[in-house]
Length: 199
Image (cartoon, rainbow, N blue to C red; front, side, top):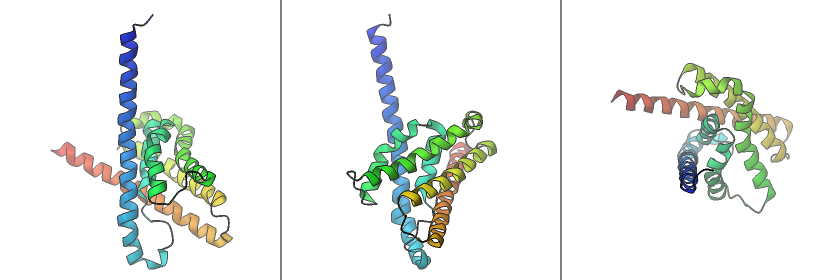
């Protein structure tokens, strides 16, 4: 039988690792949301006022969700949950007593790991070199699929009152904003990594 001190040590290590990953993933998600909503959105409204009521065209949180799902799979949902709830309440006025809020959260945060599960035959090798062209291809393919599926589901469950042409336009902007956020995040990560390694 395993010794109690060994079990305690392993349990402590698991809890510490989970807490660290939660802080890392949720912290990144909240920071990305704050930058997108408090910085990018006002700039968009100032320079493209006709899109003032439309989605943010560089939505960084989507990039964080994709990268998190790439590395953590289904566990990314739990690592991102604290920030997801905070963002929903602070920035979007979400009501946690409303079932619609939880449906939206489920669609947004469960779609990326589901897509990566479907692409699992590609993912394992790509995780070894996150900034290689091969891994970028997997991230971008999963990002495109996730953006389209997420936008479609959100418009089905949330924006049902829109006319067909309005729905298509809104969906296109959602997808564009998500993919631009993913690309900007990946490019920023690559530049920061190269700058750190060059020292």
